[in-house]
Length: 59
Image 1 (cartoon, rainbow, N blue to C red):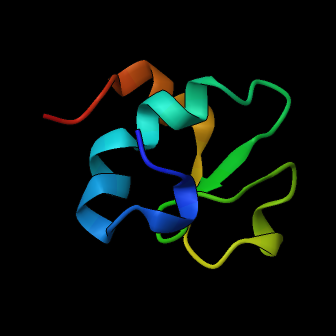
Image 2 (image 1 turned 45 degrees about the vertical axis):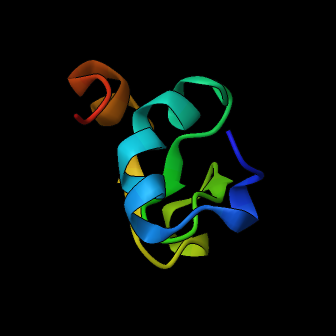
């Protein structure tokens, strides 16, 4: 996979669950830029990581 900063929006969407599973200490992942944080307010488009990991990868 490319570096996170080089992924297109569609590539981020397809890989968001996989990326989220790699950062267990964080609680949220941004669906726009794939940055992660413990705090929801620090991200522009936060999604709970637990939700993504439970849903599995997008196809």
